[in-house]
Amino acid sequence: MIELKVINIDQITFGERFRDEYGDLDILAASIKKEGIIQPLAVRACVGDEEYILLAGGRRYKACKQAGITDIPVRIYPDTLSDLEMRSIELMENVARKDLSWVEATNLNKEIHMLQQEIYGKKTSTSPDATGVSLRDTANLLGVSFGGLSDDIKLSNAIEAFPSIKEAKTKSDAMKMLKKIQEELVMAEIAKRYKDKNADTPVDVQRHTLMGTYILCDFMEGVKKVPDNTVDIVELDPPYGIDLHNIKKDGEHSTRNYNEVPAEIYLDFINKVFKECYRVMSENSWILCWFAQDPWFEPLYQAAYRAGFRGSRIPAIWYKENSSGQTMQPATSLGNTYEPFFYLRKGSPSITRQGRSNVFSFKVVPSSKKVHPTERPVELIQEVIQTFGWEGCRVMVPFLGSGNTLLATSNLGMSAFGYDLSEEYKNAYIIRVNEARPGSYKSYKEV
Image (cartoon, rainbow, N blue to C red; front, side, top):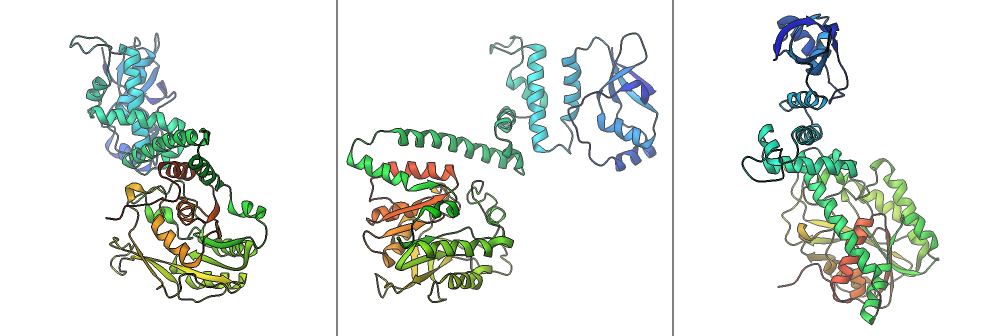
């Protein structure tokens, strides 16, 4: 029998609650002081005396304490309630709260389902009169869809293994992150099998060699092992120092594994990169450097000049044939459909494909096929590299990303190597190496 009564707040034991943070209580405390408590707290009676244990209403309890309210209305549940039933009452009251974050709501729904099954047992039959609780029963109790509750439980379990999921702004974004993580786990297993496979044929030997050219290492550490004057072309696609995580916002492709360089240290970073590239490059060689025009056009050019490189300020550009353009400020800026790169010299090398224009017109890689947020097609990179290089030349890629430059140089009969910090990107690269025959890699098929 549930009894409605007014008791002194000091008779209530607060106990441990589902919620640890109750936010700003000032407004609620002022409202209670003026209007009183509209919704009674839920308490359980203790055996033999006038003491109670709080079941539900932790925020109202805290606000009453803050407002100096002593006598409060409560719904008193009998002392025969089990610990599980007490916990269930507390959790159920939180279901309708508007201020729960998606993480709190997800964890709450999972815990309610587990409690329901602990109290009533797990339903093992689809018979209408079967005892116990199923996932569908809990969904009906909570007033949510079966699929929604299923997703909540998946996310709650995943957060325990991958806490970074909590950084997602919405439940929808969290589900996308979980899907991406699951894909990466599958890719890691596939990549491992390819790496462990014996190289029994000449093609397999080529593939194993290609897999080994993607080095998991920070460039500034890895380049220390590269001798002076041994590289003919550097294809440099460094982080752009433009806060790509916020620009992309997971709309086109996830940036979760992308390592950005903050703008405040970008020039120091790029000066060190250019210095090391110049050291390892041969007497007459090229560096092809992609960059963000705004704000780095002139600062980056000056950094390359200080390192010893020479060349025109007029860059080459990749015109994105099938792109509608990107802009963060459509009211004041047109959509951008190209990316520039400087082609600069150490010594006095000659362009191999002399007379070619500085516009490279290629389609973008479809978002569904990307493994990296700033991925460029193999076909584009192949055209750029063979414009400046020659068969047998040695190519270094300081920031590999998707690894498509390694595939492009393989098509051209060149040797290449490079560095990246992301094991996920390398796994995707390994799979691509093994999905096609060395020398015939593509990002898209020409019609």
